[in-house]
Image (cartoon, rainbow, N blue to C red):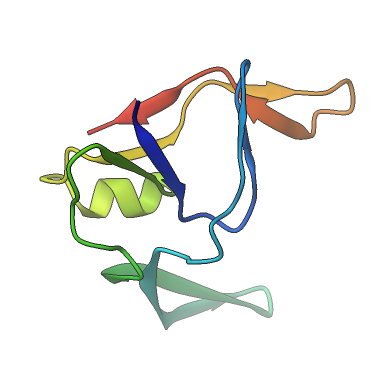
Length: 102
């Protein structure tokens, strides 16, 4: 049986199970830089860099991470992120139908 480690800050609700957050977060470093001002509103550029909080690959273990973290690690075949989202009547995300891999 596979082991799933959820490195996001919230539970991931799938059709047949919920994978609770592990308490460890995998994140991309974020850098903001001012670009301009438009009608008094500051416009910035955000770039994303180094991934932190991501354990080394381990046989039989799948890590659930954000799409941003997964995309920042294209060579990692053990990373999954939420796929097709499920929303309630108010449009709030309540889960996902599947998971996406690299």
